Image (cartoon, rainbow, N blue to C red; front, side, top):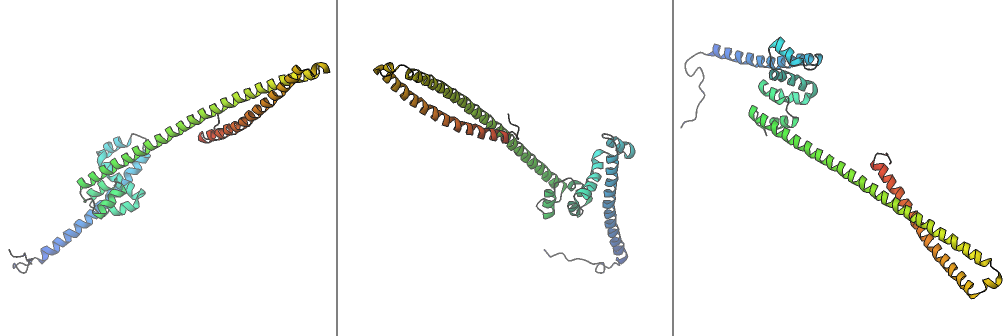
Length: 261
């Protein structure tokens, strides 16, 4: 099969120069008309934005229907172009390279989708663009849900930590109270024994020097020493617990935004 060879007007015996010139003119006219249509569409969008921002909430769509007999979808095609021009000029410059019907689809699309169309990754067709927009929307929703789950998990973890800290703080306070009570009890015993020692020592010499009194005094002095050592140990433990309580109070304040309970 022979390769096709372009045929000129001269080769087929006709003088089509006038028709060719007119066709070129019409093509240029069409290009200019399409460009004007794109410019007009943006201007209409700007006007609709002015109407929308000036009218009370809920009255814009009835206004469109009453004044222009226009549907919401058609109106928002124009508005999408004007909003993109105003708020995303970089994207607007890209979508202007495509036919007007594709501009309507690309204006509300995420910049990532527009870039995919520009690079050729997504075909410049209505169907492909709509599918890419659906995928981008689904991905955005999945990310939102993941972030929401992460936020909930963080809140639950914070609450659990705060509850654990409160329990730990209550336990420390309870132990501290018990140990202080024990110290008070030991001190009371020591004071009673000191009183008994003093009483015995005040007895007449012949009574103090008896074997029973000497033994009792030795027993009381040994018990006094033992009680003092136990009281000192518990006092040291109370000091440690007091520091732990103070530490958990600080942690509780921080985790509750400086609102200490």
